[in-house]
Length: 496
Image 1 (tube, helix red, strand yellow):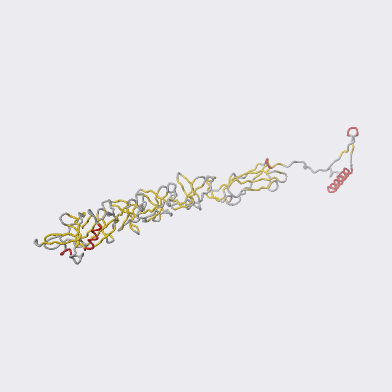
Image 2 (cartoon, one colour; image 1 turned 180 degrees about the vertical axis):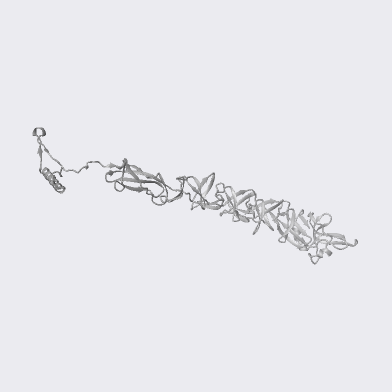
Protein backbone atom coordinates (compact mmCIF):
# COMPACT_ATOMS: atom_id res chain seq x y z
CA UNK A 1 0.00 0.00 0.00
CA UNK A 2 2.91 2.28 0.76
CA UNK A 3 4.13 1.76 -2.72
CA UNK A 4 0.74 2.74 -4.06
CA UNK A 5 0.93 6.10 -2.38
CA UNK A 6 4.37 6.63 -3.76
CA UNK A 7 6.41 6.91 -0.54
CA UNK A 8 9.87 5.65 -0.28
CA UNK A 9 10.45 2.95 2.30
CA UNK A 10 12.92 5.05 4.29
CA UNK A 11 10.51 7.87 4.61
CA UNK A 12 7.84 5.51 5.70
CA UNK A 13 10.02 4.18 8.43
CA UNK A 14 10.73 7.66 9.79
CA UNK A 15 7.04 8.53 9.67
CA UNK A 16 6.09 5.45 11.65
CA UNK A 17 8.69 6.20 14.37
CA UNK A 18 7.32 9.72 14.78
CA UNK A 19 3.74 8.46 15.11
CA UNK A 20 4.69 5.96 17.74
CA UNK A 21 6.67 8.54 19.72
CA UNK A 22 3.70 10.90 19.78
CA UNK A 23 1.45 8.13 21.11
CA UNK A 24 3.84 7.25 23.91
CA UNK A 25 4.17 10.86 25.03
CA UNK A 26 0.42 11.28 25.00
CA UNK A 27 -0.04 8.31 27.26
CA UNK A 28 2.65 9.52 29.68
CA UNK A 29 0.87 12.86 30.10
CA UNK A 30 -2.36 11.26 31.17
CA UNK A 31 -2.37 11.42 34.95
CA UNK A 32 -5.62 9.71 35.64
CA UNK A 33 -8.81 8.88 33.99
CA UNK A 34 -11.98 8.71 36.01
CA UNK A 35 -14.70 6.37 35.13
CA UNK A 36 -18.32 7.07 35.59
CA UNK A 37 -18.60 8.32 39.22
CA UNK A 38 -21.75 6.30 39.81
CA UNK A 39 -20.16 3.02 38.92
CA UNK A 40 -16.42 3.45 39.84
CA UNK A 41 -16.77 5.67 42.89
CA UNK A 42 -14.41 8.17 41.18
CA UNK A 43 -11.31 5.90 41.80
CA UNK A 44 -8.30 6.75 39.66
CA UNK A 45 -6.98 4.21 37.17
CA UNK A 46 -3.14 3.92 36.75
CA UNK A 47 -0.77 1.96 34.50
CA UNK A 48 2.83 0.72 35.06
CA UNK A 49 5.35 -0.32 32.48
CA UNK A 50 6.53 -4.04 32.67
CA UNK A 51 8.80 -6.30 30.64
CA UNK A 52 7.13 -9.28 29.04
CA UNK A 53 7.75 -12.67 30.93
CA UNK A 54 8.93 -11.18 34.27
CA UNK A 55 6.24 -13.00 36.26
CA UNK A 56 7.11 -16.51 34.92
CA UNK A 57 8.48 -18.84 37.81
CA UNK A 58 11.98 -20.59 37.58
CA UNK A 59 11.96 -24.31 36.76
CA UNK A 60 13.20 -26.77 39.48
CA UNK A 61 16.18 -28.84 38.43
CA UNK A 62 14.99 -31.64 40.72
CA UNK A 63 12.59 -32.66 37.97
CA UNK A 64 15.44 -33.18 35.53
CA UNK A 65 16.41 -36.51 34.07
CA UNK A 66 20.15 -37.08 34.51
CA UNK A 67 21.95 -39.61 32.38
CA UNK A 68 25.53 -40.37 31.40
CA UNK A 69 26.70 -41.43 34.90
CA UNK A 70 27.56 -45.11 35.39
CA UNK A 71 26.66 -46.99 38.52
CA UNK A 72 30.37 -47.69 39.25
CA UNK A 73 33.86 -46.79 38.09
CA UNK A 74 37.21 -48.49 38.69
CA UNK A 75 39.46 -46.89 41.26
CA UNK A 76 42.35 -45.01 39.63
CA UNK A 77 43.78 -42.97 42.45
CA UNK A 78 42.66 -39.77 40.70
CA UNK A 79 39.41 -37.85 40.82
CA UNK A 80 36.65 -39.38 38.69
CA UNK A 81 34.41 -36.75 36.99
CA UNK A 82 31.78 -38.23 34.70
CA UNK A 83 29.94 -35.66 32.51
CA UNK A 84 26.15 -35.88 33.02
CA UNK A 85 23.41 -35.12 30.48
CA UNK A 86 20.60 -33.08 32.06
CA UNK A 87 17.20 -33.07 30.41
CA UNK A 88 13.78 -31.65 31.39
CA UNK A 89 11.06 -32.96 29.19
CA UNK A 90 12.48 -32.82 25.73
CA UNK A 91 14.79 -29.92 26.50
CA UNK A 92 18.46 -30.71 27.02
CA UNK A 93 19.92 -28.17 29.40
CA UNK A 94 23.24 -26.51 28.82
CA UNK A 95 26.08 -26.80 31.35
CA UNK A 96 27.22 -23.51 32.85
CA UNK A 97 24.09 -21.83 31.37
CA UNK A 98 21.30 -23.80 32.95
CA UNK A 99 23.23 -25.67 35.60
CA UNK A 100 26.60 -26.21 37.29
CA UNK A 101 28.20 -29.59 38.16
CA UNK A 102 30.11 -30.41 41.38
CA UNK A 103 31.64 -33.67 42.72
CA UNK A 104 32.30 -35.04 46.20
CA UNK A 105 34.16 -38.13 47.52
CA UNK A 106 35.12 -38.91 43.95
CA UNK A 107 38.75 -40.01 44.44
CA UNK A 108 38.85 -42.74 47.10
CA UNK A 109 36.94 -45.97 46.93
CA UNK A 110 33.38 -45.76 48.10
CA UNK A 111 30.29 -43.75 47.22
CA UNK A 112 30.90 -40.62 45.16
CA UNK A 113 28.27 -37.97 44.39
CA UNK A 114 27.57 -35.77 41.36
CA UNK A 115 25.49 -32.68 42.24
CA UNK A 116 23.58 -30.69 39.56
CA UNK A 117 22.77 -27.12 40.67
CA UNK A 118 20.30 -25.06 38.61
CA UNK A 119 21.19 -21.53 37.41
CA UNK A 120 19.45 -18.95 35.19
CA UNK A 121 15.89 -20.10 34.56
CA UNK A 122 16.51 -23.15 36.75
CA UNK A 123 16.78 -23.54 40.47
CA UNK A 124 17.45 -26.24 43.12
CA UNK A 125 19.78 -29.23 43.04
CA UNK A 126 19.74 -32.87 42.14
CA UNK A 127 22.35 -35.47 43.13
CA UNK A 128 23.34 -38.79 41.62
CA UNK A 129 25.60 -41.31 43.41
CA UNK A 130 28.07 -43.69 41.83
CA UNK A 131 30.55 -46.17 43.25
CA UNK A 132 34.34 -46.09 42.98
CA UNK A 133 35.40 -49.70 43.17
CA UNK A 134 39.01 -50.88 43.57
CA UNK A 135 40.36 -54.13 42.17
CA UNK A 136 42.86 -56.14 44.20
CA UNK A 137 44.90 -54.31 46.85
CA UNK A 138 43.74 -50.89 47.89
CA UNK A 139 45.28 -48.43 50.36
CA UNK A 140 42.66 -46.26 52.02
CA UNK A 141 43.95 -42.83 53.00
CA UNK A 142 40.81 -42.35 55.09
CA UNK A 143 41.81 -44.84 57.75
CA UNK A 144 45.36 -45.67 56.60
CA UNK A 145 44.49 -49.33 56.09
CA UNK A 146 44.93 -51.89 53.32
CA UNK A 147 41.94 -53.66 51.80
CA UNK A 148 41.60 -56.25 49.09
CA UNK A 149 38.75 -56.01 46.60
CA UNK A 150 37.24 -58.77 44.56
CA UNK A 151 34.11 -58.54 42.41
CA UNK A 152 33.50 -55.00 43.62
CA UNK A 153 33.62 -55.71 47.34
CA UNK A 154 36.31 -55.85 50.02
CA UNK A 155 36.90 -59.44 51.01
CA UNK A 156 36.50 -60.25 54.72
CA UNK A 157 37.53 -63.02 57.13
CA UNK A 158 39.68 -64.77 54.57
CA UNK A 159 43.27 -65.37 53.44
CA UNK A 160 44.75 -63.53 50.48
CA UNK A 161 47.89 -64.75 48.78
CA UNK A 162 50.27 -61.85 48.27
CA UNK A 163 53.71 -61.68 46.69
CA UNK A 164 55.60 -62.39 49.92
CA UNK A 165 53.13 -64.66 51.66
CA UNK A 166 49.65 -65.03 53.04
CA UNK A 167 47.65 -62.13 54.44
CA UNK A 168 44.49 -62.14 56.51
CA UNK A 169 41.65 -59.69 55.88
CA UNK A 170 39.56 -59.24 59.02
CA UNK A 171 35.80 -58.91 59.43
CA UNK A 172 35.87 -55.28 58.34
CA UNK A 173 38.06 -56.09 55.33
CA UNK A 174 41.20 -54.56 56.82
CA UNK A 175 44.62 -56.16 56.47
CA UNK A 176 45.49 -57.73 59.85
CA UNK A 177 48.84 -56.73 61.36
CA UNK A 178 50.67 -57.42 64.64
CA UNK A 179 47.95 -59.76 65.80
CA UNK A 180 47.01 -63.41 66.30
CA UNK A 181 44.01 -64.75 64.41
CA UNK A 182 42.25 -68.09 64.55
CA UNK A 183 41.32 -69.78 61.32
CA UNK A 184 40.33 -73.37 60.66
CA UNK A 185 40.94 -74.30 64.29
CA UNK A 186 44.55 -73.09 64.25
CA UNK A 187 46.22 -69.88 65.39
CA UNK A 188 48.30 -67.72 63.06
CA UNK A 189 50.31 -64.54 63.60
CA UNK A 190 50.36 -61.63 61.19
CA UNK A 191 53.55 -59.57 61.29
CA UNK A 192 53.79 -55.78 61.20
CA UNK A 193 53.92 -55.89 57.40
CA UNK A 194 50.72 -57.92 57.32
CA UNK A 195 52.36 -61.12 56.13
CA UNK A 196 51.72 -64.36 57.98
CA UNK A 197 54.64 -65.42 60.20
CA UNK A 198 56.04 -68.82 59.15
CA UNK A 199 58.73 -71.13 60.54
CA UNK A 200 59.79 -68.63 63.17
CA UNK A 201 59.54 -67.56 66.78
CA UNK A 202 56.96 -64.91 67.62
CA UNK A 203 56.99 -62.86 70.81
CA UNK A 204 53.79 -61.21 71.99
CA UNK A 205 53.04 -59.74 75.42
CA UNK A 206 56.41 -60.98 76.62
CA UNK A 207 55.71 -64.61 75.69
CA UNK A 208 57.39 -66.62 72.93
CA UNK A 209 55.51 -68.84 70.48
CA UNK A 210 56.58 -70.84 67.44
CA UNK A 211 54.75 -71.10 64.13
CA UNK A 212 55.57 -73.81 61.59
CA UNK A 213 56.22 -73.49 57.88
CA UNK A 214 52.45 -73.28 57.30
CA UNK A 215 52.12 -70.51 59.86
CA UNK A 216 50.30 -72.65 62.43
CA UNK A 217 51.10 -72.01 66.08
CA UNK A 218 52.65 -75.15 67.60
CA UNK A 219 51.16 -76.57 70.82
CA UNK A 220 51.82 -79.50 73.18
CA UNK A 221 55.05 -80.45 71.52
CA UNK A 222 58.84 -80.33 71.67
CA UNK A 223 60.66 -78.07 69.27
CA UNK A 224 64.35 -78.21 68.37
CA UNK A 225 65.68 -74.88 67.23
CA UNK A 226 69.34 -74.06 66.56
CA UNK A 227 70.36 -77.33 68.21
CA UNK A 228 68.41 -76.63 71.42
CA UNK A 229 65.19 -78.12 72.70
CA UNK A 230 62.14 -76.10 73.67
CA UNK A 231 58.62 -77.04 74.70
CA UNK A 232 55.43 -75.41 73.48
CA UNK A 233 52.59 -75.76 75.98
CA UNK A 234 48.92 -76.33 75.22
CA UNK A 235 48.46 -72.57 74.89
CA UNK A 236 51.36 -72.45 72.46
CA UNK A 237 53.44 -70.44 74.93
CA UNK A 238 57.06 -71.50 75.27
CA UNK A 239 57.67 -73.18 78.63
CA UNK A 240 60.17 -71.26 80.80
CA UNK A 241 61.33 -71.66 84.40
CA UNK A 242 59.27 -74.77 84.86
CA UNK A 243 59.25 -78.56 84.78
CA UNK A 244 57.90 -80.42 81.76
CA UNK A 245 57.09 -84.14 81.83
CA UNK A 246 58.46 -85.99 78.82
CA UNK A 247 58.24 -89.67 77.92
CA UNK A 248 61.56 -90.39 79.62
CA UNK A 249 61.07 -88.28 82.73
CA UNK A 250 61.02 -84.70 83.91
CA UNK A 251 62.87 -81.91 82.11
CA UNK A 252 63.63 -78.37 83.24
CA UNK A 253 63.08 -75.46 80.90
CA UNK A 254 65.29 -72.50 81.81
CA UNK A 255 64.37 -68.83 81.81
CA UNK A 256 65.32 -68.69 78.13
CA UNK A 257 63.11 -71.69 77.43
CA UNK A 258 66.06 -73.94 76.62
CA UNK A 259 65.93 -77.47 78.09
CA UNK A 260 68.70 -77.79 80.69
CA UNK A 261 71.26 -80.59 80.21
CA UNK A 262 74.42 -81.55 82.12
CA UNK A 263 73.49 -78.90 84.60
CA UNK A 264 72.53 -78.29 88.22
CA UNK A 265 69.52 -76.09 88.86
CA UNK A 266 67.94 -74.85 92.08
CA UNK A 267 64.19 -74.40 92.26
CA UNK A 268 61.74 -74.45 95.12
CA UNK A 269 64.67 -74.41 97.57
CA UNK A 270 66.06 -77.75 96.30
CA UNK A 271 68.85 -78.74 93.94
CA UNK A 272 68.27 -80.95 90.90
CA UNK A 273 70.52 -82.36 88.23
CA UNK A 274 69.63 -82.57 84.56
CA UNK A 275 71.53 -85.30 82.74
CA UNK A 276 73.07 -85.12 79.28
CA UNK A 277 69.75 -86.18 77.73
CA UNK A 278 67.94 -83.44 79.64
CA UNK A 279 66.09 -85.79 81.96
CA UNK A 280 66.10 -85.13 85.70
CA UNK A 281 68.32 -87.52 87.65
CA UNK A 282 66.31 -89.52 90.20
CA UNK A 283 67.18 -92.40 92.53
CA UNK A 284 70.78 -92.29 91.44
CA UNK A 285 74.24 -90.94 92.21
CA UNK A 286 75.50 -87.84 90.46
CA UNK A 287 79.15 -86.76 90.50
CA UNK A 288 79.50 -83.07 91.26
CA UNK A 289 82.59 -80.91 91.65
CA UNK A 290 82.82 -81.53 95.38
CA UNK A 291 81.95 -85.23 95.36
CA UNK A 292 79.05 -87.60 94.93
CA UNK A 293 75.44 -86.57 95.50
CA UNK A 294 72.30 -88.64 95.78
CA UNK A 295 69.20 -87.58 93.88
CA UNK A 296 66.01 -88.81 95.51
CA UNK A 297 62.98 -90.27 93.78
CA UNK A 298 61.58 -86.77 93.42
CA UNK A 299 64.87 -85.67 91.89
CA UNK A 300 65.73 -83.37 94.79
CA UNK A 301 69.29 -83.65 96.05
CA UNK A 302 69.41 -85.29 99.49
CA UNK A 303 71.14 -83.44 102.36
CA UNK A 304 71.58 -84.17 106.09
CA UNK A 305 70.18 -87.60 105.58
CA UNK A 306 71.02 -91.31 105.55
CA UNK A 307 70.03 -93.27 102.48
CA UNK A 308 70.27 -96.96 101.63
CA UNK A 309 71.00 -98.05 98.12
CA UNK A 310 72.55 -101.18 96.69
CA UNK A 311 72.32 -102.82 100.08
CA UNK A 312 74.59 -100.24 101.78
CA UNK A 313 74.03 -97.16 103.87
CA UNK A 314 75.40 -93.74 102.94
CA UNK A 315 75.26 -90.34 104.56
CA UNK A 316 74.66 -87.11 102.65
CA UNK A 317 76.08 -84.08 104.43
CA UNK A 318 74.49 -80.65 104.78
CA UNK A 319 76.01 -79.57 101.47
CA UNK A 320 74.56 -82.66 99.77
CA UNK A 321 77.91 -84.34 99.23
CA UNK A 322 78.33 -87.98 100.23
CA UNK A 323 80.36 -88.42 103.40
CA UNK A 324 83.49 -90.50 102.78
CA UNK A 325 86.41 -91.38 105.05
CA UNK A 326 84.74 -89.75 108.02
CA UNK A 327 82.47 -90.23 110.99
CA UNK A 328 78.79 -89.36 111.04
CA UNK A 329 76.16 -89.77 113.70
CA UNK A 330 72.98 -91.77 113.36
CA UNK A 331 70.43 -91.96 116.15
CA UNK A 332 73.00 -90.41 118.46
CA UNK A 333 75.61 -93.07 117.67
CA UNK A 334 78.77 -92.81 115.64
CA UNK A 335 79.07 -94.52 112.28
CA UNK A 336 81.96 -94.55 109.89
CA UNK A 337 81.68 -93.84 106.18
CA UNK A 338 84.48 -95.49 104.28
CA UNK A 339 86.32 -94.03 101.29
CA UNK A 340 83.62 -95.38 98.99
CA UNK A 341 80.98 -93.70 101.10
CA UNK A 342 79.62 -97.01 102.33
CA UNK A 343 78.94 -97.20 106.03
CA UNK A 344 81.23 -99.72 107.69
CA UNK A 345 79.37 -102.52 109.48
CA UNK A 346 80.38 -105.60 111.44
CA UNK A 347 84.04 -104.89 110.98
CA UNK A 348 87.13 -103.48 112.56
CA UNK A 349 88.76 -100.57 110.88
CA UNK A 350 91.62 -98.26 111.54
CA UNK A 351 91.29 -94.55 111.07
CA UNK A 352 93.26 -91.69 112.51
CA UNK A 353 95.77 -94.15 113.93
CA UNK A 354 93.17 -96.03 115.97
CA UNK A 355 91.11 -99.16 115.68
CA UNK A 356 87.36 -99.13 116.00
CA UNK A 357 84.68 -101.72 115.81
CA UNK A 358 81.47 -101.08 113.89
CA UNK A 359 78.70 -103.50 114.76
CA UNK A 360 76.25 -105.08 112.34
CA UNK A 361 74.14 -101.90 112.43
CA UNK A 362 77.18 -99.81 111.64
CA UNK A 363 77.36 -98.27 115.11
CA UNK A 364 80.73 -97.75 116.70
CA UNK A 365 81.38 -99.95 119.71
CA UNK A 366 81.36 -97.82 122.85
CA UNK A 367 81.75 -100.42 125.58
CA UNK A 368 85.37 -100.98 126.80
CA UNK A 369 87.44 -103.24 124.60
CA UNK A 370 91.02 -104.30 123.91
CA UNK A 371 92.27 -104.43 120.35
CA UNK A 372 95.52 -106.19 119.49
CA UNK A 373 97.03 -105.94 116.01
CA UNK A 374 99.53 -108.70 115.31
CA UNK A 375 100.80 -106.98 112.19
CA UNK A 376 101.35 -103.73 114.10
CA UNK A 377 102.45 -105.49 117.33
CA UNK A 378 100.34 -102.92 119.15
CA UNK A 379 97.68 -103.12 121.84
CA UNK A 380 94.90 -100.52 122.19
CA UNK A 381 92.35 -100.02 124.93
CA UNK A 382 89.16 -98.07 124.12
CA UNK A 383 86.25 -96.85 126.13
CA UNK A 384 83.32 -94.79 124.78
CA UNK A 385 85.14 -94.58 121.49
CA UNK A 386 88.24 -92.97 123.00
CA UNK A 387 91.66 -94.58 123.25
CA UNK A 388 92.97 -94.73 126.82
CA UNK A 389 96.03 -96.90 126.16
CA UNK A 390 98.27 -97.67 123.23
CA UNK A 391 101.39 -99.77 123.72
CA UNK A 392 103.79 -101.96 121.71
CA UNK A 393 103.66 -105.67 122.48
CA UNK A 394 105.24 -108.97 121.49
CA UNK A 395 102.87 -111.74 120.44
CA UNK A 396 103.45 -115.46 119.79
CA UNK A 397 106.48 -116.67 117.83
CA UNK A 398 105.85 -117.58 114.20
CA UNK A 399 109.07 -119.33 113.23
CA UNK A 400 111.15 -121.90 115.05
CA UNK A 401 110.89 -125.46 116.22
CA UNK A 402 107.25 -124.86 116.99
CA UNK A 403 104.66 -122.38 115.91
CA UNK A 404 103.32 -120.33 118.79
CA UNK A 405 101.27 -117.71 116.99
CA UNK A 406 98.81 -115.85 119.20
CA UNK A 407 95.25 -117.01 118.40
CA UNK A 408 93.15 -114.41 116.61
CA UNK A 409 89.46 -113.75 117.11
CA UNK A 410 87.07 -112.31 119.67
CA UNK A 411 87.52 -113.09 123.35
CA UNK A 412 86.80 -111.73 126.79
CA UNK A 413 88.99 -111.28 129.89
CA UNK A 414 88.37 -114.34 132.03
CA UNK A 415 90.05 -113.15 135.21
CA UNK A 416 92.59 -110.75 136.68
CA UNK A 417 95.55 -111.88 138.87
CA UNK A 418 98.50 -110.13 140.45
CA UNK A 419 102.01 -111.48 141.08
CA UNK A 420 101.66 -114.97 139.72
CA UNK A 421 103.84 -117.52 137.93
CA UNK A 422 103.41 -118.76 134.40
CA UNK A 423 104.83 -122.23 133.93
CA UNK A 424 105.47 -124.44 130.90
CA UNK A 425 107.96 -126.41 128.76
CA UNK A 426 110.25 -124.95 126.14
CA UNK A 427 110.22 -126.09 122.52
CA UNK A 428 112.80 -128.79 123.15
CA UNK A 429 110.22 -130.58 125.22
CA UNK A 430 112.53 -130.86 128.21
CA UNK A 431 113.39 -127.48 129.60
CA UNK A 432 110.78 -126.06 131.88
CA UNK A 433 110.15 -122.40 132.48
CA UNK A 434 108.62 -120.54 135.40
CA UNK A 435 108.02 -116.87 134.66
CA UNK A 436 106.94 -114.39 137.35
CA UNK A 437 104.42 -111.81 136.18
CA UNK A 438 102.94 -108.91 138.09
CA UNK A 439 99.75 -108.69 136.01
CA UNK A 440 97.95 -111.69 134.52
CA UNK A 441 94.83 -111.23 132.39
CA UNK A 442 93.87 -114.49 130.63
CA UNK A 443 91.43 -114.36 127.67
CA UNK A 444 91.35 -118.08 126.84
CA UNK A 445 91.10 -121.04 129.20
CA UNK A 446 94.01 -122.96 127.73
CA UNK A 447 96.66 -120.55 128.98
CA UNK A 448 96.55 -117.61 126.62
CA UNK A 449 96.45 -114.15 128.17
CA UNK A 450 97.95 -110.69 128.54
CA UNK A 451 100.84 -110.09 130.98
CA UNK A 452 103.89 -108.03 131.69
CA UNK A 453 107.29 -109.32 130.52
CA UNK A 454 110.12 -107.58 132.36
CA UNK A 455 112.65 -109.92 130.80
CA UNK A 456 112.24 -108.21 127.46
CA UNK A 457 114.29 -105.16 126.70
CA UNK A 458 112.08 -104.05 123.79
CA UNK A 459 108.66 -104.54 122.30
CA UNK A 460 107.02 -104.15 118.89
CA UNK A 461 108.56 -104.42 115.47
CA UNK A 462 109.32 -107.91 114.15
CA UNK A 463 110.57 -109.46 117.38
CA UNK A 464 107.56 -111.75 117.49
CA UNK A 465 108.44 -113.56 114.29
CA UNK A 466 111.51 -115.38 115.69
CA UNK A 467 111.63 -114.44 119.34
CA UNK A 468 108.02 -114.19 120.22
CA UNK A 469 106.13 -115.61 123.19
CA UNK A 470 104.59 -119.01 123.60
CA UNK A 471 101.30 -117.42 122.44
CA UNK A 472 100.57 -114.85 125.16
CA UNK A 473 100.70 -111.13 124.60
CA UNK A 474 103.80 -109.70 126.31
CA UNK A 475 103.56 -106.12 127.52
CA UNK A 476 105.85 -103.59 129.12
CA UNK A 477 105.34 -103.63 132.91
CA UNK A 478 103.99 -100.09 133.13
CA UNK A 479 101.53 -100.63 130.29
CA UNK A 480 100.37 -103.94 131.74
CA UNK A 481 99.79 -102.25 135.10
CA UNK A 482 97.78 -99.46 133.53
CA UNK A 483 95.65 -101.87 131.51
CA UNK A 484 95.09 -104.04 134.58
CA UNK A 485 93.60 -101.08 136.40
CA UNK A 486 91.42 -100.02 133.44
CA UNK A 487 89.74 -103.27 132.57
CA UNK A 488 87.29 -105.52 134.31
CA UNK A 489 86.58 -109.20 133.98
CA UNK A 490 84.49 -109.68 130.87
CA UNK A 491 86.16 -106.88 128.92
CA UNK A 492 85.99 -107.63 125.21
CA UNK A 493 89.24 -108.58 123.45
CA UNK A 494 89.81 -108.48 119.69
CA UNK A 495 92.99 -109.98 118.21
CA UNK A 496 93.70 -109.80 114.51
